[in-house]
Image 1: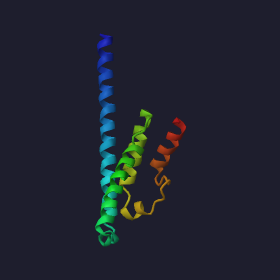
Image 2: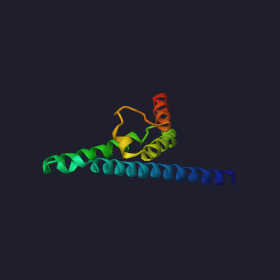
Image 3: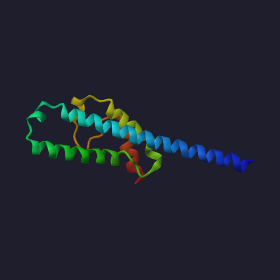
Image 4: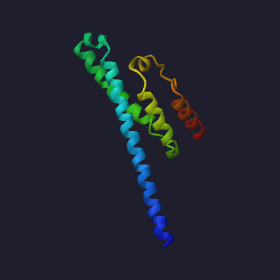
Length: 121
């Protein structure tokens, strides 16, 4: 009986981790879409040449890959912190997001994620 309960518990734990990973992936993808919207809402974008618009589109695809990679921690115990960070970024305005420095951890949730990730290395 104990082995059956342990097996059920293990199965439930795996499904929770999987759901958390799926939620993290979906939340990161939604954040990427928000970033694309922020970039494309800039009035200067409309004045770009077609070649520059193609380059921008390619850069946005790269940006989405980087966002996904940045919020997919190698240490599974950091998934909750990563999810909190990406949620906090998603809650920011486009104006605030566009003003960020590349290496900046702009929210308390992101600073926590960054600090925990550094400790886990």
